[in-house]
Image 1 (cartoon, rainbow over the protein chains, first blue to last red):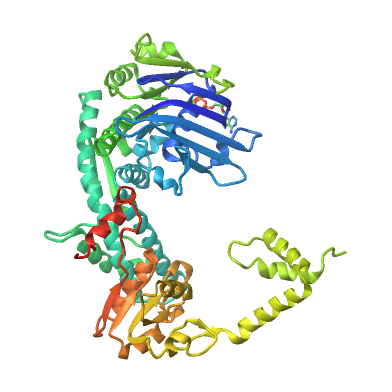
Image 2 (image 1 turned 30 degrees about the horizontal axis):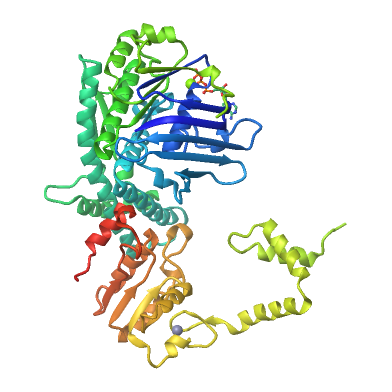
Length: 374
Length: 197
Ligand SMILES: Nc1ncnc2c1ncn2[C@@H]1O[C@H](COP(=O)(O)OP(=O)(O)OP(=O)(O)O)[C@@H](O)[C@H]1O
Ligand SMILES: [Mg+2]
Ligand SMILES: [Zn+2]
């Protein structure tokens, strides 16, 4: 997938801007506040209907204006060309158009434009709480498998229902209707088992990708990803049956605590560097390198299932990394993909081993992009 | 000094109770009402009054009705051995429009949702169980949502020791739908629940 051109109107710092991108590496350079990240945010919005920096769409609308618009022309390796537009307004809900037709549900955009985004905000994937890692994988697996997305949504809904009942008991002493609880358990188990089985399946593949990619970046160390589900099937037991069994066993504890203590909402994804958990022991640079490997692996998985090359948005890619590792990353950048890199200083990029005089490279002086009419 | 008549405020307040109607819209509706011919407003008032005096729910099936039992329960040609369970009266209207169903109904008056404080006691479930003695088949026609599924599973558990056949609406590919554009989950279910030709 390629984004050929982008237009922005009243999008953050841009009053009007129109850009044509190169098919390979695109470098956006400019001083702090020039508007580099904003360009990446705009592209991200067209793939995911929202920015990676904020979930408050209002923040994306330029100060003192009330409406913003972003549009992009994409061309697929397999799919036909498509034009995606996003309209933001303070007065009405956001809407998205694909080839001029309004999308009835924003979820319809998921999986349409494979895109991998690495931003400073993603640091939580390796350093944050277990929920941050679940979010990373849920987003990824949902893009390659709509059944996963649906099972996850239904699980979350029925879990909320179950917890509401448990909480009503724990807090208000309202008696629990055990038949109703069983009806809820049946569904928690059914949807939860789908998610758990698919997590195991996709992680198996992801694990190999990320191991190989990390090896390429850093030969002396090994990176391992592991999936530790909360529900543990016994020999010969299906995941769904194990779920049922564990829900039943934990019922008294769940009632006391007013919440469900077993299930995919408690699953762990763990990352190890040389057998030590990165979250606990990793240095800043080790976290960053691990994140880079995770993001490239994300791209591999997306491409594998969507049979479409992802676009890479790499914001502040070299922050926290030493020269040796930056050089290694530049050498390992996936070939033949459209990549966006931001930098405050071109000299810096050169120093990191990037050849800027190449027909494979398109360089944008970001500060000069403003007020270029479409 | 109070600018607007109190009655207008009171009407606005009542109208804004409708789902999706905010204070502003309610006020506009109230003002509009004042412009209607007096007789029309009176007629609306009479109708609203009649809705409380005359309309109630069927003591057998829970349908909204002016007669008790309702026309469906009272109908001599409706097959009493089949009961179709639905969430509310609107669903009955939809099924009746198909002209394909000759059995009777039971209206639950909602759907199980602990989140919204709706448990089995809040629904017409006791009256449903009481009707089951002469029933051979129960059709669950509940929305394909998590809550619809919970309600169906709950009823199935309740009826598990009774000799009634339980069925549910088939879920699958809509008429006029293009297979290519149907989401995988729906298509998958349609495959699982495929019918012999
Ligand atoms: N809604 C908005 N309206 C106008 N300007 C905004 C809005 N939101 C952010 N800005 C400004 O836009 C400018 C560009 O931000 P951006 O994050 O794109 O900069 P950057 O080039 O990535 O900088 P850095 O090198 O510091 O990461 C900043 O000065 C920011 O304060
Ligand atoms: Mg930036
Ligand atoms: Zn009736």
